Length: 49
Image (cartoon, rainbow, N blue to C red):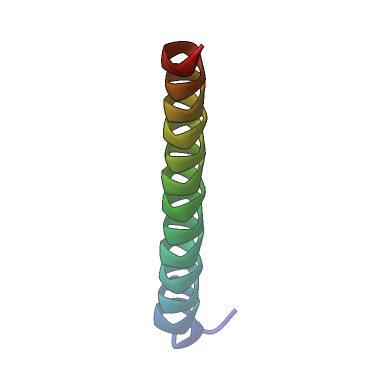
């Protein structure tokens, strides 16, 4: 491995890590939104009966 390749490899790994973090963040946000909507529906169903 050439010494000049290290910064490029580090930059590529940093980019991949950022993408992975963003994907996990979006997945968590969508999960929280889905749970919130499901809870709201259950609450409205309970209140309507």
